[in-house]
Length: 120
Ligand SMILES: [Zn+2]
Image 1 (cartoon, protein in one colour):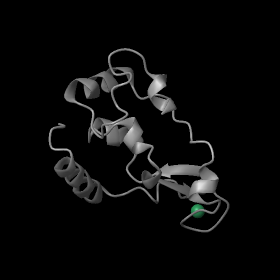
Image 2: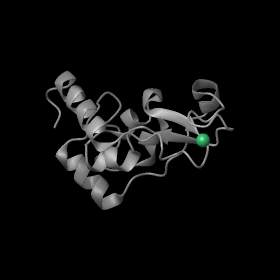
Image 3: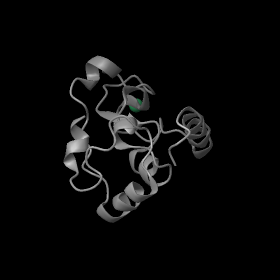
Image 4: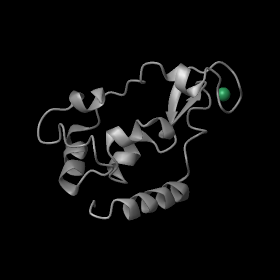
């Protein structure tokens, strides 16, 4: 995915087939911060052009598991967080409304760990 190409160095190219960053990769993100976020091309066709909360015109792509927390707190990869199933079309007002709460995220991440037992 193109977002992986936005980072150079030891992290580059290591995510595409994995859900989790390892401890060293997560440390690299803490140091370098996250790459700029760009919405995927064609997101309206995939996610719809109406806000999922209020049905107004969709202006943004929101993450159910927030991007930065997903990486820094939960060790998920940028590629995973940009999967369609983690994205929701929203208006500007409701971008944060669709974010999952901490408990729901933790339950989801625990399921992922069961699916990918060797990742940390
Ligand atoms: Zn809305």
